[in-house]
Amino acid sequence: MKFGALAAVQMVSFSLNPGEILGMIGPNGAGKTTLLNCVIGIHKPTSGKIFLNQIDITGMKPHKICRMGLAKTSQIMEPFMAMTVFENVLVGALHGGRMRMRPATEQTEKVIELVGLKQYAYKLSGSIPVPARRRLELARALASGANILLLDENMAGLNPHEIDEALEILKKIRNSGKSLIVIEHIMRVVMGISDRIIVLNYGSKIAEGFPEEVVNDETVIKAYLGGKLSSLKVA
Amino acid sequence: MNFKIDRIILIIFLGITAALAFLPNFVESEYLLRLITVVIFWIGIAGCWNMMSGYTGYIDFGPVVYFGIGSYVVAIAMTKYGIPFFPSLFISGLISGSVAFLVGIPTLRLKGAYFAIATFAFAEAMKQIALEFDRTFSVSFFQGSDGITLPISGHDNSFFFYCVLPVTFLVVLAHYYIEHSKFGYGLKAIKEAETAAEISGVNTTANKLGAYVSSAFFLGLFGAIEAYWITYITPSDVFNVQKTVQMVIMTLLGGMGTFLGPVVGATFLTLISESLGARFVEYYLIMIGGIIIVAILIMPNGIIGSLKIRKKLRFI
Image 1 (cartoon, rainbow over the protein chains, first blue to last red):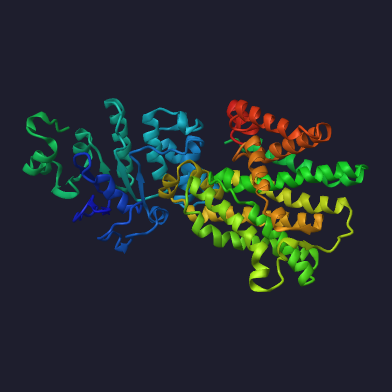
Image 2 (image 1 turned 90 degrees about the vertical axis):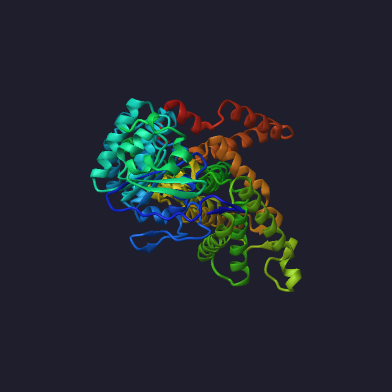
């Protein structure tokens, strides 16, 4: 993916297996978000291809990709402010899940229950605290019925207790048979939850493998973790 | 989501419309009947603008173009091809809607001020086309600045009352549909955050186009009715930007993207300019300007919009 002459992400190739949680890490500006935005169709890649179950989805419109089962949560939270939490999630179910009003309402209720947003359901989404908004992003993506969820720093700004709760939710989602790609800076999260990790730096993939392999990789330590491994706590 | 209250509001609205249908039997004064017709007419037109701009947040600054197209289609169909009024009326709506479809595909990609400028430019361009088309191509369609005189209808005021009422009824009913449907949630999501809507599965192009075309369809109907009512149209009248401004102000006064906004805004503004206009012939426009400024300062979200926020209502 190039923006003008600047190549934001290049020569990155990776795959996601069914039921897997793939962690994606890398320093700021490494191109993680850009990469996922290419996958869900917000950016059209200047070269390269993206396949979903052997179907080429490169350059498809975002709404089509979403309806095919690929949903992303944004790092910059964008709730539909003038709508209630319930209505926000409902949009995902109605449009992303291509449902009629009644089944969409039922789906919304289920998803809100799952992510634990029940107490905020009828509040305006602009008026709820940040942790709840993060969950709302997740709920909206879930409501579309997507099998693959891309979570772009869905836990940024949460305190350790809230992170624990969020991790529980992610595990529940994984156990329901969905695959996830998780971008996260919080190492405890990435290490604890990922089956596999890929590391990006300056728009290229510099490492891929199991969590314990990646943290011991020399290039990764140099580029990202920045020095001694002893300072890193692996949960 | 309290659908019960919404249903009650809908039933009240249906009841009022049904009661209005009998109005011409009771109103003796022709003036009063005309005034009521004008109010209903403006509720419908403001509603057309609200359907598109109020719900999607795309500020259309040239809706009058579809009104004008409706006027011209009905005039040409009736005078040149001798088609009776009601079929012509329907053709007007269809042609306005089709033009909106073609114009919407490129312009709805534009955002914010650029969309407003493009729609405004299109409306002005259509006015020039209507003025110059005949002379340029040596044909006789729009009659340039001479305008077109439609067949005198010979109908009384209640005829036009019954023309306007069902169309406005449909426009307001469309608002109710928007507020409670998949389509409407798509529009509102586009207004709040278009990219987020897109990645949540909303087909933004189709939804915007749907709103734009339906708004144009109804505007075409209103344009056709007015042309038949006034019986004489010129490009500078039917494509007058003042009509656009009035739709916008009425909707803003009532509340953008609300069910009752256009109803309240149009009624308020029409009645106030009528009553002030009769009493203070020379100063009434200044007074209306002042009232609009004060109203917007006190209620930045419009009458209904502010009420909605203050009372924490989801639908009104």
